[in-house]
View 1 (cartoon, rainbow, N blue to C red):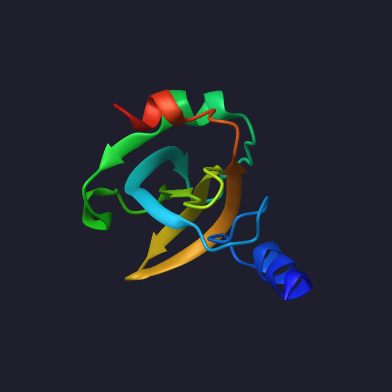
View 2 (view 1 turned 45 degrees about the vertical axis):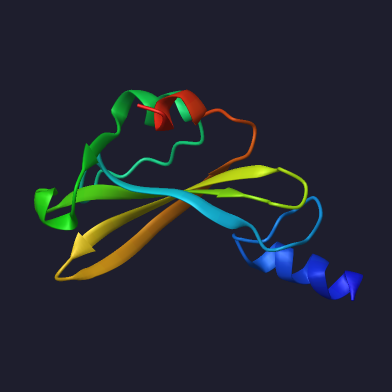
Length: 115
């Protein structure tokens, strides 16, 4: 059973990488990024997101041609490990065209998410 759990944790964002158990979603929010179509630049630095994300209530609040970022925070109830997943996408005609996914698991965004 251990190898099965390890494989699931590799392919599923909501499974703990440390103990291979399903994590609980503890927080979710939608943001807007200051990037327009054709000008997407990949960022792996938490400070970029801390300084450039703008909280929005729904996709309708995001101007046409502007990238969005959905953030989900997970916590493992077994070992306490936490993971923050940023899904960067372009809202297009009621669909989400995903550009990138960035993960942070060392608390880099904790203070930002408390705002």
